[in-house]
Length: 168
Image 1 (spheres, rainbow, N blue to C red):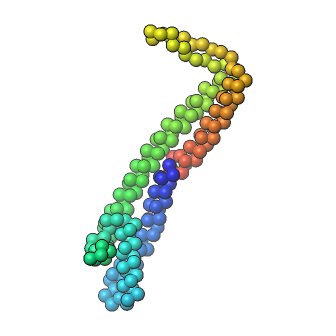
Image 2 (cartoon, one colour):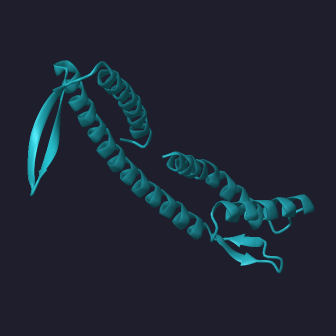
Image 3 (spheres, helix red, strand yellow):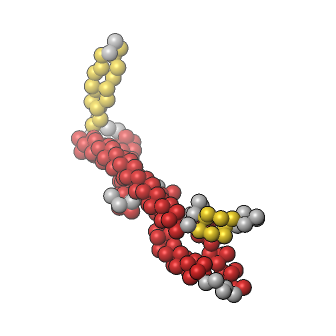
């Protein structure tokens, strides 16, 4: 999930910063009488755009530095990143919901055990035969169940926050 948060921030930053960079790129690129400082700035911006969105450059100098950017490639790459991010968010939401449901079910079962003071186990009798055996919880087992419930509830809270953050 942390990698997804990083990618979400990166895409948001691209969407926020790229229009300003492209606007400045266009201004400098269209100025046929650039000063030395403007030429350096154009070189810097062109390479910055290409570093942010590799594949957006259409021309390079002999040292491999980007010297021209395609705005349509920038837009296409940005849309592709957004689409990929949406798919990653969808997968993360599905996984988190599955984990939350499983943990909630486990907490429910453990809570029933605590409330009844018993636990039920399936014993394999062989040849595909099983028998349910219910026994009283020992104080140690009761403490372990309480600890497990606390741990699961903590994980559930974190998963719910994660789910909210990825748009669930």
